[in-house]
Amino acid sequence: MKLSIIVPVFNMAADGKLEYCLDSLVSQTIEDYEIIAVDDCSTDESLAILRQYESRFPDRFRAVHSEVNKHQGGAKNIGLKLAKGDWIGFIDSDDWIRPDMYERLVRRAEETGADLAGCDYCLTDEHSMKVGQVVPNNKRSQSGVLDKEKRRSLILDGGSLVVKIFRRSMILEHGLWFPEDIFYEDNALGNSYLVLARHFEYIEEPLYYYYQHDLSTVHTISEKRCEDRMEAGRLMLEEARRHGFWEDYRPELEYSFTLLFYINTLFTYMAGVGRTKYRFVKAMGKEMRQTFPDFQENPYYLQRTHAEEKKLIRMQQRSTLFFMLYYKLLWAYRKWKKRGA
Image 1: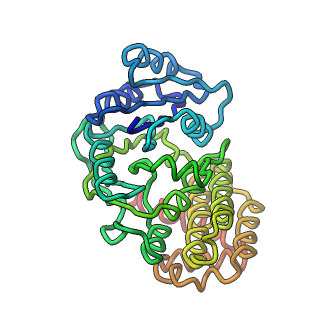
Image 2: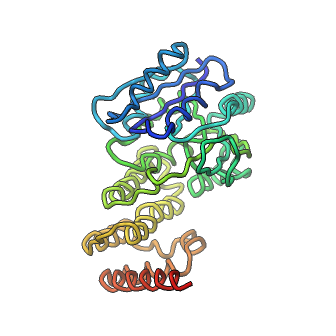
């Protein structure tokens, strides 16, 4: 079989979101492929919808039910164990794709001998094939046989896994199983999926539609999700050590960890969680310091981190209490100023 498309599904029955995604999958132009949709213990009608598609498209659609909620990582692992395709694609169940996306990615990969291929995506808030805001997911310079410089670039700017295909033999050879029971599983495994490839090909065109709505993971902030993002950072470093690329790419991994574990988590926690906890913020800053004592001297941190963020991070590293008080006052002032404008 040429391709296996794995779709983790959890409570996506409302507003036709799931059907729009699945319709784009069953109409793919590539030949000899399968769709493995894994229901992650949904409490709505998602499983019933998946079974309808399995009944309508028995030659290419398989509905699988997990009795335990394992989050997207667990659902992806279930799909990977069942997959028979030479190539693997992952898609979020509230997004959709162009009819020829997988045909073009597989053709490009096979023509060039790549074991990894990707494209761009666009942001949209409506169910249509109208191209929204285009987001370049990779760089032209990353394409080709992967050397050290290209791998450095992929660690820093690897882009999303859902707009890529992967040779299944590479996944199985390296045991690239996703962490279960946490969000941000792609962040934990993303570097391994990219760095362990030998050749990457990139189509500079938005073939994937990323649906923007309030229930998506990236728009839902809680302390648990912040903890999961921090755990994803820890697992990212463990993966680099397990696969032997820690020493070669330490500066890039240090910055990636700083961004994932600390910077993104710190500011989304402060802005998005209603009742922030001193001990949570203090522990985050302490672990960051213990993991990488000199992270503020990292060249990528110096180049890429905004000056105001650097100022706030220096403040938090010196005094969590002062940082939290200052941040709350700053946030309140900006909200007041915005209302006045």
